[in-house]
Length: 299
Image (cartoon, rainbow, N blue to C red; front, top):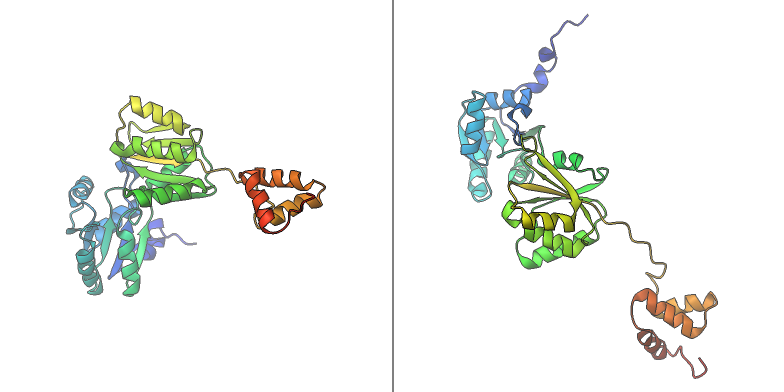
């Protein structure tokens, strides 16, 4: 009979390996959400790379962990990644953490992971909190298929392109947004996706004042115009309904008219119906028929 304790059974899997990068998920608000494995890894690695060493320092002090730290964020990732890789290659182990949640989601952690793989350095994830996943399961919207878009681009042309793509998106959509940008984003979404699209606005997740507001885009916009947005938001937006397949999608306008004629409509009625399908004037279709020599004097 095997009388091994659970910690002995998992000792091999949970050991801290030299020269390995650990992606350690940290709480997004409630410190009790940290895992035992995360605490073990943070206590056992040689050094910790953090998005913000001040915020992470508070977390580590709370749990009595004292480890060397270096900052690793968007604006210093090029120089710092070289330092981190050099230390990993020398046999040191490193834990990468973000301000909150899972590293590599909407932060430069993904870049470091790729560089590790390209350098032959092993990477392990210590799973835990992820604000996007927390929000989608609380949203009341479909969770079988969803897409994470992060923050919408600020540059107008790029923003317009992404919003245009979201018009065709049938999956549930997740966005991050800062409070001071929320109203503009809701205005853009309302205009692009329509005022009746359902949305769940999630803020302060796992904290005392956790709030999930479920409504339409129009209702959300009206509410936050009257009530100042506070805290970081995750927007979970209902996907669009599938558009009915157009039987004439691959037909030319002339072939489209011919289809209706073959089904018993007169030439002019077929032209009218084709114009209606394509949302153009019947004169446009008629002129195309003339150009193709498909309209004779007797039609």
